[in-house]
Length: 337
Image (cartoon, rainbow, N blue to C red; front, side):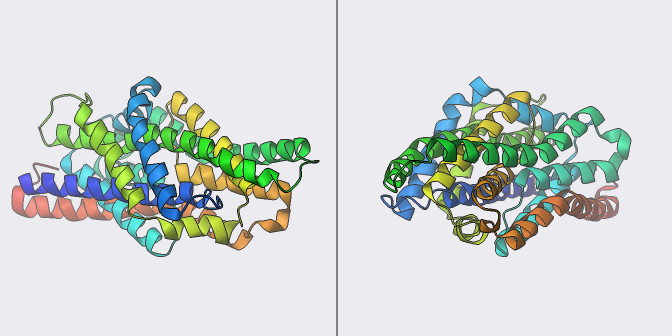
């Protein structure tokens, strides 16, 4: 079964890199309006602060990782892990290929829930934990949009007599806001992968409990940074050009509102989507300036992708689990599933 263990590890690595690719594109896409930084320097800046998340990750706590690892009332088996990861990775590859930012959190939660459901039924899911996860996943985009809308109105009020030269100061302010957003992202987003690594080690018998080794934290954060370094420019283009033509004030507003939502959601222990939070904040900020500034056709595409991710990955995970179950019955006698 060693080869199945390494398949699970490889799928986790791919998932984490794609996660950085997707969310990194969301962060970069709200920052490319700064004229004094090249695209490469923006990417390097975001990666640096993502890695800084390692130093505060234990101060925020492992609430997100714990919420995912406690999703099942039963021992998570190798088949469940492989089905969930396979579904999440397939979905992420498809959506990234067509340039639509979707939620890595939705993909993972949908995959895990689908695999657990097909294996054990509803009794296999810790419904209190699962309900909390779903509530936060659905609530964070609404809160982000409202916060972005209110912040933009407040800023427009205080800057109503400002001259165009204010854009230069706002452009420099982005250095601070993107540093905060990237650091919080680096401290919270890798927790999903941390949970998966721990579940893999436990389910394959390499670890007897759900404790989190430090090397898992370092690897998970580093893979996120690697995904950001790899590009994510198609996702960045979606945010910066297709969804809304971003100005410095839009960038600052989006980063501030997104950081607030990410921080409080993490402290509450909720699993959320960074790309969803940033995208909703951006839409809220755009609507506050002018309703027709937002590309509602593109926003609708992103919304549909967000809504169908959990059921789509859940169904994918069910199919993959069934295939693994058939393999296990034919080859292993059904023991390991």
